[in-house]
Length: 144
Image (cartoon, rainbow, N blue to C red; front, side):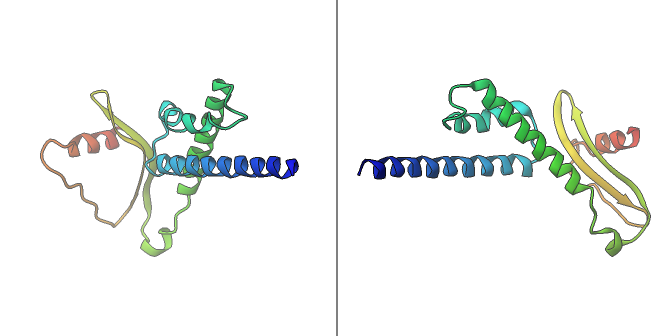
């Protein structure tokens, strides 16, 4: 009888660990989808949950290192997946730029790791109210 209770406890601990990891994966997916790869924000969002896992609970540094490795893997994966283009054949035209850039203005990050792909012969428009940064964006693109 004693063996059953320890097996039940181990099974419950496994289920709890799986639930925590699934939730952490959901949080990481949201951060990745929003292209937020700021280390501290990942640590702030994921560490409290990972720290509740038995093998990471006693070492905050190990927990933060795990988050950082996961953040880097997510960012690298996004960058590699973005490099493939399924639009090339469909839309045609010579590609004139295919870049990824960040834009900050006045100490505030406006665009982070934003992908810009332009093709010759296509028309593009920047639409927005006065003062929202259309000219600033075009100047930044022109200056590289």
